Length: 393
Image (cartoon, rainbow, N blue to C red; front, side):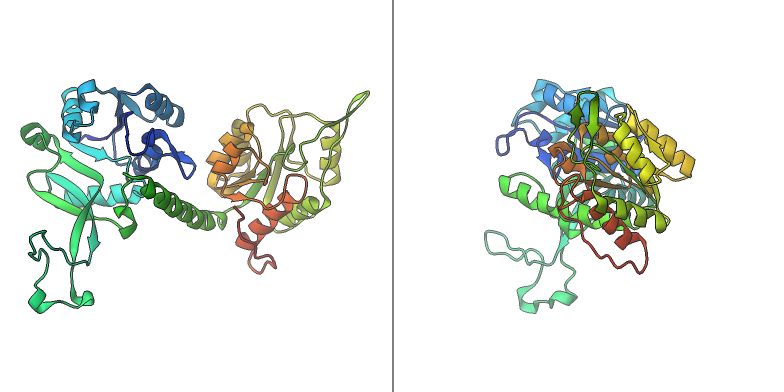
């Protein structure tokens, strides 16, 4: 069985211009359900079909090497064209046994939904699968006919099974169904029930605000779970441990501003058994002196590729990146921040960094931001810690 996922995207959107690549809670709209499809491990290949150069560039930039691109014809990208026309076009060129249509407009889809739906599809020997959400509302036709209950025997809510609303998150279709019926649903159909929050589809501007709030809440809950598994902390220097200022005299750099509260935080981290590493792109005698003062031996100056060095440090510790927290403020910190278990940044970090951070401290760099991160880490990883801080965003 060859399982292939396909997300058709087009550039035109009248209700929300540029909708598919517009940032939603820190990531392009298309990235949410697409990332879940990748994380699920359900598919032999994952494709994005588009006619738009901007979408193509955005997908390649975010998912380089993990997503394949399909060139959609203009005929399948008009306002009048059906999604089925895009699926039939794709099926003419790409081999598969089961095709999963993934909808970018359903960002609440999780990787676990794909996994459970695939199991249900196989176990039920289905030909196609539709996703849905349960509702216990009573439905009526415009002509006044009840659709899902008997008004003469109105059930109590707790006794009412309700109805399932198609939420459009994703669909499974066997090739023979698509080839013969030219429709995503046919043959023996099974319905996979998803959580209530997944009923949200982004079609109008108001949907956008609701989805953003829901995704931010989900990310905060997930970050709280992840921080409890952290075993090590890696910290940038300039703009994180310092205020980013470089004070020069006639002989070159003379001073950098550090904060004594940060030093106490780092000391407490080590005393709690949390491993510590400091890395920086710069080579500075002032920083060397500060590291010696703090007795930090795991110090890496002059690092051009921080993610590669981070992986080397993690390997030396025998820890996965998911067990490491990283704190940084600038573009060269982004690869590390995106790959660790928990990402910190100071209040005055670049907007691109703030967008991916799990916790933005209330303090600026060089003014206690690192101490704040240390206290939060201790409160979530060390039983009995007197700190009980919450992420500030």
